[in-house]
Length: 98
Image (tube, rainbow, N blue to C red):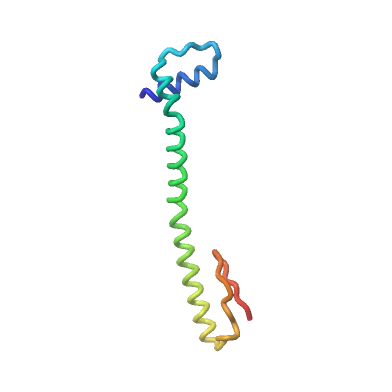
């Protein structure tokens, strides 16, 4: 509650240069905690983005592994061992050489 009151005081002070602070304790509290609160919410936002992105990335990794195993089975079943080489697997691409 003290933080919110201090934030309101700060907004009023920014809007009107001649504004006199009514709740000095709240304003001082807000000024001292502003950076900490800001960094907390920044870290929270980054964490939430990572939490949302993780299932997508892990699903993609599993699908890539599955596709590589299916590709290897196809190479083996088509008698192309030694003729087709799986050169590199990067992110979502499979690079093969013939």
